[in-house]
Image 1 (cartoon, chains in turn red, cyan):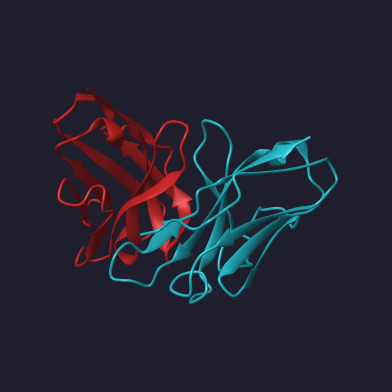
Image 2: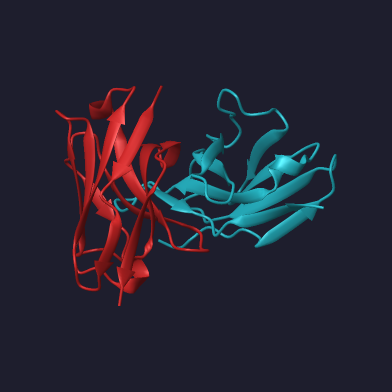
Length: 117
Length: 112
């Protein structure tokens, strides 16, 4: 059974940093593109970032470019999202996602990030 | 990174069928057969309902079906049930050198 377990969310002041982690199990992590999707309170889904299986290519939404960094440790089956210079508009539930051709076949349960101004 | 276009809301009575549209461009929905649909109940993570335009994951009811014509994909739910009331999102592969996927804005389905 595929499992994606996020951690690292919490309350942070505007301008601060957080690092999200996603522990994967039940599949060959190093074979899969992975990503982060967020959902602000009462809003829709937003694709934030994704990273190819070997970490050689990563992409970002314009709204987080230059502030967020996605990475992975295939030896530990773990995905990361380093979030710097956080803003109030980054407040959201962040989901870890397994990506297959731009489609998400497995989601984590989500971790809440709250940025206070 | 423009979002796909979905109606904000749709509604139907139990037993009826509804269809939700998802309009993209010739660079995403129209270019690839990698369109998916997700169901999200309040406070829950999204759940994959349809992938590759018209395929259902194991365990998803055959009341859910997908299709595509040109730049528009559609999700049809037949025999509406109370538990189908949820938010529905489409997504498409972008095939670009930026993000792999893009979502629609979401559609709130109300079962009357």
